Every structure is written in C-alpha cells, then in structure tokens.
Image: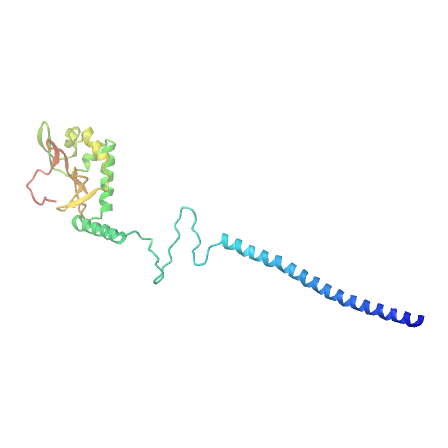
Length: 234
C-alpha cells in the first residue's frame, strides 16, 4: 500500500470512530437524562406520599365526625338506619310530663301556681329565721285556737298571738323550718302543706292574700282553726 493510500485509510478510520463515539455519547446522555428525570420524580412522589400520610394521621378519618372540644360531647347526627343515639336521657319526656301534671294538679287544687305559693312561703320562712315576730304573726289568719303546755286559748289577732309566740316557735321548731325548702309544698283538701305538714296555708283568693292556717309543732303545741270541722269560712 502506498503512503498516500495509507494516509487516506487512516483518515477514514478516524472519522468512523469519531461518529461512533458521538452516537455513544448521545445514548449515554439520554440515559443520564432519563435517570436524572426519574431521580427527581421519585423524591417528589415520596414527599407527596409522606405529606398525605401525615395529613391522614392528624386529620379526621373518613366517616368520622370532628372531635369535640375537651369537656363537651359531640352532637350525634341523626339518620335513618345509621344507628345514631339520641342525647336525651331515658325517661326525660316522662319526667317533664310528671312535672307538668304535678303543676297542673297543684293549680287545680289551690287555685294558684306552685311558684306563687313558694314565694309567700319563702317570705314566711325568712321572717321565722330572722325572728321577725310581728311579720310572722301578721301572716296567720285569725281567729285561731292556740295550744301550749299551759293550756288552750282562743286568739283573736296578731298582737294577742305574740304572747304565745315563744311557746309555738321554739328554737328546735325554728331550726326545722329553716332546713325546709320553700318549694317543698303539696296540696290536700284545698290547703297547701309545707314539708311534713308542719305548717299549712290558705291559698290566695281574689279577696284575700295567702296566709297561715295552722302550725303543728307537737301534740301539746299548735295553732289551728278552732271552729267546726269541714270547709272553713272565708
């Protein structure tokens, strides 16, 4: 082979090698690009999954109601067939009905509401507690039969009753009344009783205010109506 032919052959061979290297470089570059792309995408996917997982752990689960504040009860949503339970306690309706029936019966028997009666009784009990004798004596309806260990007497009015006040409103009896709520009332035979019946009251009418009709301390200490039994006048 002549020198000229050898130089031409070498030039062609070098050109072929350079072309091949270029193709390999393109392939390698493309591979690096793909790897780089997949490498960048993977962390993004991982971060997104981690974020969703954290949100799922911190937030309410599907189908769950938001948690209530501490010390409160979350409301129960009602729905057909969802098993929701009512927050109203059992027997709630019957208790309200019983209270309504009691209030109605009290009014039917006394002609006044229990709240109105309790307001007067509260004033009476406060006067007893404060030892306001004139006020207590003024709440009793006269004439009345008063019995003490010394005997019986007919009392015509408040001033005369003050003579027997200490024999009726003894220290023990006053303490008993102080411990009796003004709302502990009931009706019988048209009269209003307090507690165990220690004191009885006439209900208020259009003509008269509510008043004390009898005070029952013991068998030998009481204030009662001294007339005939049955319906009392007035």
